[in-house]
Image (cartoon, rainbow, N blue to C red; front, side):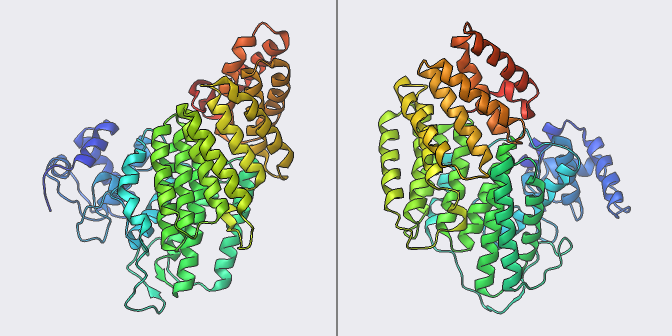
Length: 489
């Protein structure tokens, strides 16, 4: 089938830097390695794919996705190339054509995690892709997220649905006990992430999510299917957060989108909103607060009436951080005040979702500290409340929240430098520096780099001068090039 140039494939082809003849030879070689020695692609056929929009036959779409993923060092899906999936009827459905139907979500989940795992087996870090603007996501998903998912089915009895790719996973029915075990595994991964950062267990989470994608190929009884979608949402949020934690930003955003879709299919709109708030936090970290605010408007609108006060409080703290990055003092004070009121008003008369249990009083103070510390870049008077909230967060932090404690120490130190208290700042900075080496979170190093910038004003003080040298040496050995990034705020 043809329909004009395939611009997506053409763009990827230019990025890869191959000639058409080189790509043809690579396709033939890879296809033969996958058990298709009869495939004979040539230069003219590659030209027809790119310039004429011709859809190649199986297994070429998957072969091309593999080759571009390996070449570009980031996950490239069949849809990213403007091609169909094997077995589809020639329809082109780019990954970013949002929202996705339920079966489409399962397909994206399975393919994306599979390509991500392949990338990591080869030791390649995802990079080079563009993040989708927050306004684009908000416009695409606003009405969809607020509407109820379509739960109608011609037959609610368990069966195998249209395959996501049954060659990757043999779809079988699951019982409540198996889903119980999957839900417990999420808690284990979540606790590990909070302690050591996302770098060490990311691949395990992605692998588990890939398995769940295959399980979704079997249409279970409605209550079990919703729980399975919930597991997928929780794992996708973790995969996204861990990817963000190690600097794999486009990969992280894709997982947050998968999580929002999966949460909606599970009937949990507040969970979808929380996933979008993660994407907003990512945007603030990357110095794109305007796009973070677009995402937070979507999260607020889509969270639904069933969102608990604590959930709404958490969403407001993320919004406050984004406002702080723009220097909007009034908006920061308003949203943080609302967040406090909602948190206190939560009587805990309904069970707290497992994904919200990390947002406790310590985390409320930690987010308040972060918002005030960020605002202090625009208004130095905000440094004192940042210091106060960060110290309170440290008093309340539960055991096992090591990464959050590092952030709190950095926040106190940064606030003290801004407030002209270098002696106290140096003390807290050393606490952060001593703990950060055992953590795999790149974000902690990004924040340390920002704090290092603030020490320059006190470089004549002997203790701070020594601290600057130690931090500079540590940053030079930091993962992800934190010394040069200077991204965190």
